Image (cartoon, rainbow, N blue to C red; front, side):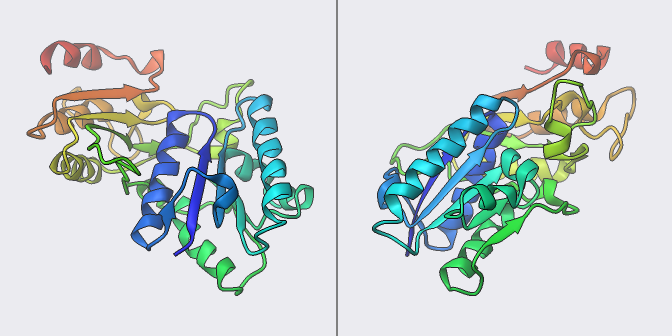
Length: 263
């Protein structure tokens, strides 16, 4: 099966998305490689928060395309993530060697699109449309990757998007509006991770303290985020819970109290 190289720019959420894509590809028989110039598939998971990150990704892809195409005309070159979401087909127009552009709500479609490209069913793919339920599709874990050492920590995505629309930030445009997974779904993923040897999870979201405000709401004086922390805390064998990134406006008394109550 073809080999895959993935490079990630940006935040922990991007790292988590890349891991999920890698796990999906490995489950289909692809192998991961750290050798970009001998890979059959090159995926750059991009960031748009800073201009420098976009320039790095564009420069990297241009460099790889110039060297790789000379010896492997069938290699698949793709952008994923926030820059892919914001620029779309413009990336293929700018770099004609690029075959694949995957937006932030389409990571779970990556393996299928790569299969179509390798089989010659399509010449190029740009997939950046919104997809209902996409917040629940980032759940596969590679954990140890190419290492023979078992990982004891893992990222768990609990929500996607942001509703803040801060003047300086592009995230709501690239990640969409806030969408939260169910508590049961997140707990199930965490239980599976513990069964595989994980002892610490980091709950991820653009603003984790906004988790579930619309979908779950407050119950018995506890925000949805505190309800989630309590449910994850009850998993036997899990020793530590981290989360990022919070926002000051989400720090209610219930969360402060939870710090002292849950150990």
